[in-house]
Length: 345
Length: 242
Image (cartoon, rainbow over all chains, first blue to last red; front, side, top):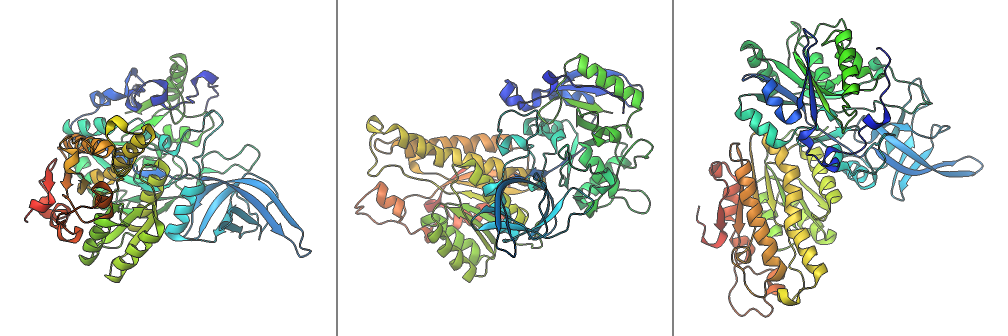
């Protein structure tokens, strides 16, 4: 990806609602996949770019409060105990009692205990492996663990965020299935008013769930390559059926977010056709991969190093993409989860 | 991530530890539904949970205050984790405020705000969170518990009546917003019942009161497929016949 620098003032540090506009009134840049033609408008007018019979596919995964602070404890044979504060970021649900997590303090060892409340703690149950994550086993499981995470946790907030926005700001209006550790942010600009209006216009809606993992690991910790990044996802029967119907009627499949692209391009049958599926994916989409299902993409503006950008080059020639990013900077589009949107179609 | 392996209906009831909420929980448990219940009072909620389980229901009970956004998110996320989807939401939780109820002329500011928070903001927070899943699945019923005092203003019904006026307006607004969908939003005035809240509202009541368990037919109706085309309506539980 070509180098570019996002000026500080283009990092959206506030949700649109706190910048004085509705969530659905952010800007929309439309980039033509074939010609590279760029047009500018309001996200609220997305319907003008869509046709009757098109299908929007949304990720309904809901953001969980993945940051938990606690005390790091170790009791050695000599009964020497250590206690210091530590921040963990849940990265991936494993089972009723276990999560993978990023620990923001070095030196944590197998058997160490992280205590979040007197009756809520987790033990580190793996040796430090190749990846940046550690496996934690909590003392409570299932729904009770979920409840405790919600009691103690906070949303992941990155360095360009200066205020502790509550979890509600990190949700799309259609999020229902909790499990993402970062908001699937491409859907954030949608309002129900828009979705219902689009439906009246003849645009179909369908949902998948893909629970996002952590995309950004702290600078000093090993980077995760995209094919190491496993995410749980589900493409329901009804969605697969709508995709088939839309394709048969020559409508376009438009993914809202790269998570949706990942899910839909993973859930393929032997003929390369979309199928209902529930499982995990480590599919890495990049230039050269022939997209089987998705025709268009609604997405935010990504950092230069983000693997998301590689994925965008599966949709559009890199030179068109770079030019659109240059224009976005010149036109003061806002970046990241609270920022403006791009439609590549 | 959830254990949605059941074809049972999942019914969510707020304020389920006492009175109408507890009676609704047991009635739906007897019908074989999964129950997701919350209340601020843990011990009483636990007792209702055990009674419902005794009737064969799977019950998730969470101590939560519907006026607190974090509690609402924690409650509903836990329900989605356990049951996967919510078919029916009954916004029943409410508080009366100071008892005996003072005139608005005399109403303490903090109590007024608190009653509106629980009785009006609470149903907004819970409904906004739950209705999303209903819209996606193309089915669902929201039932708001209102009051005669939310329909006509009476001296001495203070913030409670005003909060229910808000709830009635909210019901109509929401019903209109989702009128093109298969989701329905209605409200029920249960009438005067023999509950602890009624005792606080009308101390030393000297007339006959209905028992909560005897006025549940309208709720069962609104939770059922029979009411699929009913949206934005106000029902009086004690006048209802199926």
